[in-house]
Image 1 (cartoon, rainbow, N blue to C red):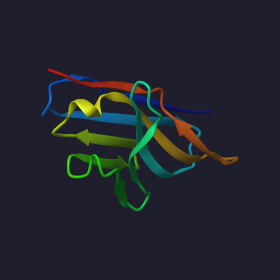
Image 2 (image 1 turned 180 degrees about the horizontal axis):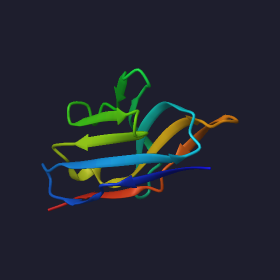
Image 3 (image 1 turned 90 degrees about the vertical axis):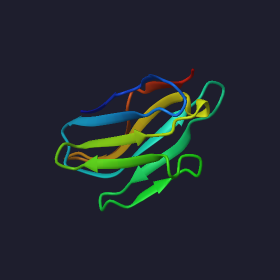
Length: 119
């Protein structure tokens, strides 16, 4: 059994910063790609950023230069530092990890954390 637990969401003014964290716990053998996705009301879930086990990163064009994804392999965590936040960044943010357990590989999702950017 594997669970992802997110933290760090909240309300912030435009131009402000927030840091999201997501920790995986359970019977984990290895973690490949880690990532963040978001879903605004009325919209489909969309890609934000990913990071591979080797540290290669990929970002959506809308967040490049403002968001930074990082990972701590020893702690099975992924972080998302969000700077220069805009109202259009408002959404529920979900972490995602591709995890190997002793029996198989599976895709896991966090429960979501609300980020609201508003004055």
